[in-house]
Every structure is written in structure tokens, then in C-alpha cells.
Image 1 (cartoon, rainbow, N blue to C red):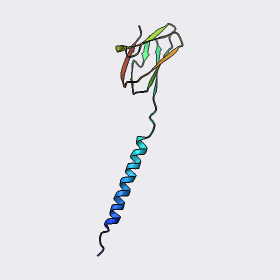
Image 2 (tube, rainbow, N blue to C red):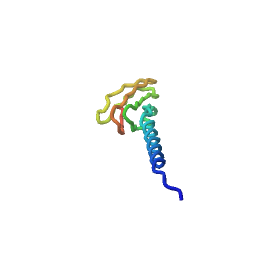
Image 3 (cartoon, rainbow, N blue to C red):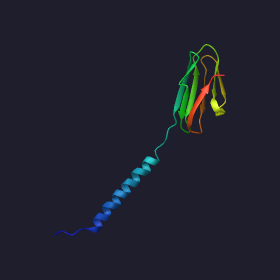
Image 4 (spheres, one colour):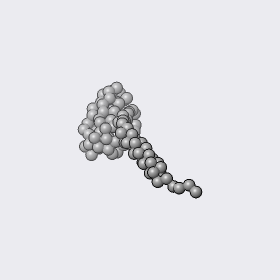
Length: 104
């Protein structure tokens, strides 16, 4: 009868633990890229009408109408961005959340 080798079993467990730890470290260190969401203003409407962002994400509004519009953040999170025909303007968010906006 063959005896159980405790040293080999410990080495196998240690190796598996180290491999899992290394994999977790690599995944945790992976860079997180910020997103840029494009919002159009056309036909006197925003598309989309609100955005959900993470910290560091940007939103850029582009006015495709022939008249001036604003992108004004509800709850005063960001100010008023005035946009003439063909202009774009944006905001980078430092707080994650869903943000609606209007034209004033």
C-alpha cells in the first residue's frame, strides 16, 4: 500500500494558492478606462435624455440644431453649457450616478 505524501499535498495546495493570488493581483491591477458618452441635440431634443456615468467618465453634447441650446444639469451638478449650431461641450464627472439635463 502506498503512503500519503503530506509534503507533496502541501506543495500542491501552496502552488494553487499562489497561482490564484497572482491571478487576482493581475486582475486588480488592470487599468480602468473612462468612457466618453456622446449626446446629440437635434429636433429640439436630447439623445439620450440622461446619462449614467462612473467616476472619470465624460459626456459631450453636440448641437445639431440651427438654433442655440444649452445643456444644463439638473440638481446643479454641472453648470450650463451654451452651444451654438455645430458646437460641442462636455463635462468629466467625479461622482458616479445618473444625470438628467435640460435646455434652458
